[in-house]
Length: 339
Image 1 (cartoon, rainbow, N blue to C red):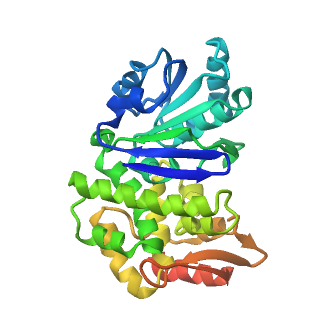
Image 2: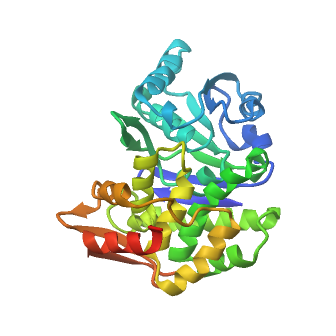
């Protein structure tokens, strides 16, 4: 399956196909110098498979985790490009999750004012979410994604077979973002989460494809986050606060989103959402009180004076953007989460 994506900087395809990694040399232009960026959490065979299709490959393996998305690692990528005589006609390929994609894409966007970039996401989260939209970034001075650029890849290669090596928790982590998109935009997809067996390849492939279709539609209409793209922040106000307070070592991003969606739904929606999250073994509530989280929510970029803009789901498949008093958000968090 090919999913075309249009951007102001040109169009690119997302290729969604089991076994696509083995065809990297067919789908990507690799007969040149290629910097393949991967991390220690990705099976080495994935990067090596891409390298076998390249004319002149260089594999750079960075430590797994958000801590690698820093200026020091970005500098390492640039040094590797310079030391190996990369030119404007060469390219960078990311093989891994969102951290690798963000970092490699940003390096490609800035080296010699931009060289070709390909993304091969190998986690559910990166396949359904971060691989589409053209956002690249690194963290700086403790601030997540504060330095970055909109820089779409030349092509995205999604091979669901690469998910076979992921632990169950990581798969659920990525599916939380698909649940998010289903709640705001695709009632039929949400029903699939209620009734389908996600262990079946065909069901998982359908979830990935429909999630990509939703995000494609959103980013094409709002490439630079000026309006519609805000719906992708559903559940993220509380999620970002959770990440800030507890750090990435306690909760994965998708787990934070799962918790963050709960207070932003109408009661009838919540009744259907909770069983889906439990079925995926995603958390639905916090341990302890919510005081630190409420304080962290005040630093959300959608705050204006004492109001905050939130994405609310009144019915499955529908959404509304509401500017509400911060006290109203605080009440929702306490009522639904504070046990």
